Length: 437
Image 1 (cartoon, one colour):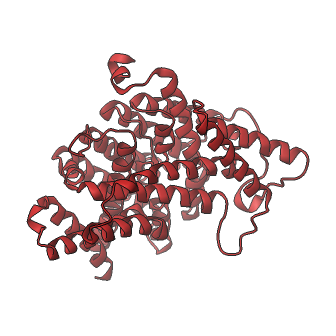
Image 2: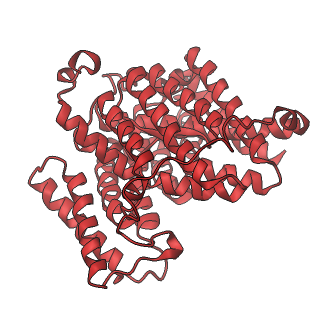
Image 3: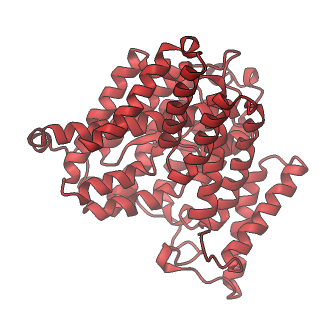
């Protein structure tokens, strides 16, 4: 383990990496329930989608472990799966959309081999990298509050799940104060146990409308459903007939996935101290290749675009520093294949506090941003605020990057920018313009 993952060099050990891997899995395990639910609206088999989602996560996460030695997990991306469903709702078959994702994945592999994506990451100025980290933190917390707890206008804050989540948040906070190892993981488990107790006495009543029928597992063991109905179901002839419309779909997936992945890797890497003294991402090529291979494999299995997960920051915060964390996360996805009733019984109100705490911790990078210079402050602010508002890492980055370039040109500092920054902004402008054509 030491030789393969360089544990001592990263100041970690097997136990810490195991706790971090399990924590990351618990923070992102919701994808095993949510992704099949979203994609099944296209007519795809929900059981097959569960298996495909898990296997794609295993492949992508193991690639990240061995290609880059990063504590980052991958799975079918939220937002990207919704886009998949919306394209199908627009009258295009899911087989054609899977073909678009395959093409996107292959293009990503080529871009990574020629270090194009790596160049993009290393061209991002330090202040924008700090803003991306803080923005992702705010976005993670937003996901915890909104998706996990249902916060919104007119929310009843005295519901059992919100009270239980608040108790879980305090438990995590107390444990973190006393520097308890694995505080976030323990907080998730304690909140879940309290929920079971609340259900036993009749105080908490599961809500079937959000997919929670009981906190008790319906079974312990369940064989993985077959993926035969969605495996390798590409439609190249249908894609050819679509012509330019197919290319637009490919480009849309390409742009969102590229900048979601870059934002996530920069944010999590900054949190795990994986950026070098120049603020550049170490082993960037391996990390980006893992994402590209994961997406390609995912399309073959029959699921939407596979991307790096911001919830990986939960594992980083409890000490995960190497690819061994990712190995343990992948191992949990393997277990989930056979013990899905148990893993899927953990409710959102138990994992929401973990996302909120992680969001808070990632927001710490905001103090290093130079807010006295408005040519830096405005782009940083837009990046941070618009990620949760627009529910998109890529869109938050887009407004931040475009405004940064414009303000630096006005400040007569355009010549100091890396040439790749101009290419990045050009790509973002294309992302805005192409849907209008």
